[in-house]
Structures are given as structure tokens and as C-alpha cells.
Image 1: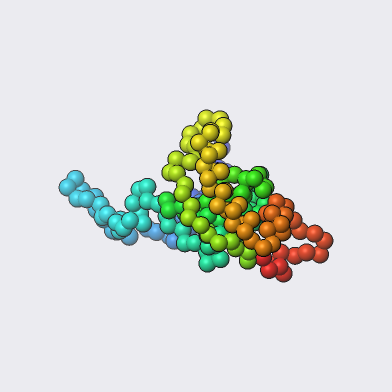
Image 2: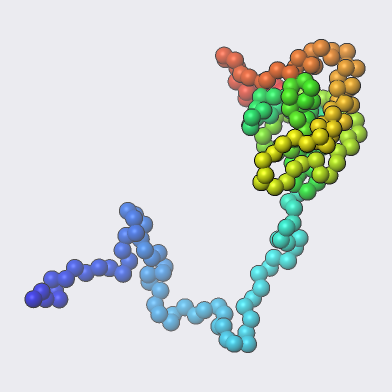
Length: 199
């Protein structure tokens, strides 16, 4: 029969992983009944409410994302992510609810359709075109998990949005250069560093 002295003594505060103890130093040295709880819960008592009453904490509240100073309607942007990365697109406006940017190729030049994109996924260039009033419908983006197919209404919307942009490009004295610039993808060559470039 094994005596009690031969049993291994396991500490209450053992290692969960190397260097990480089960209890912190303050928790381990806390004596029972020494620290009184801040609130005693009784049947009639109510717990204090968290101070989160503003619109910032309301459920479904859309976070307003401030627009970068370099992003103005008509600015040519370089897309950094997704299937169209490297393409140059024209910025139309910022959507009020989501804060995303509404951009277009135009589709006729580089195959970039009317899309929403986040500010962090674009680089603003110094090239700008004169902004014209854009009339875009509210339901131009499909919702749901069904397989996406381009509707006729969507094609019409893309054409109506791209028409004034293409007209503005054609009026520009260097329109041939602009068509080539928007039609080619952005890429870095040898000894080209983005932090030394001026876009």
C-alpha cells in the first residue's frame, strides 16, 4: 500500500503551456472573502447599464468612412486587389451607406464593369477628368447567394454611366494617350520602387 507521502504533489497553479500559468500572481494571492464584489445581485436589484447609448453603438448603424483627400470624383485610380488588379479605373462617387467607392473602367476600354471597392484597395493618381453628373440606380448591385449573371438592366446601367466618361475622354486633347493609359495594366519593372514613385 502506497502511503500519502509518496503521492506527487500537484500545485493549484500549474503550467498550461511553457511559461503560461493557470492563475495570475494577483489571482493566486487573493484570499477568500478579502475582496468584496462591486455589486451584490439580489432579486430586485438591477445590474448597471453599460454607457453605450450613442448612435455609434446602435445595431445596424452604418460606419461613416471619411474619404481620402486625394479621392475626388473623376480621379483615375489603380486597383490593387482582385481579378482586376493593376487596372486603371475612374472614381465616380462614395456610396453613403457602406462608404465604398463606386468605380468604372470604362468597360469599353479595359473591361472593368461598374463596381464597388474599398479605399484601401486603390491608389489615387494625379490624373483627373472633369466630373459629370452620374445617375445610378439604387438596385444596380445584385444581392443574394445565387449564381450571378449579368442582367440587361445592369448592362444598360454600365452603358449610361460610361457614356459621359467616354465623351469627356474623347474631348481631351491627348485622348489617344488616355485610351492607352486606361487600357493598360499597372506593373512594376526592374529597379522600379513604388515608394519612390509619384502617382
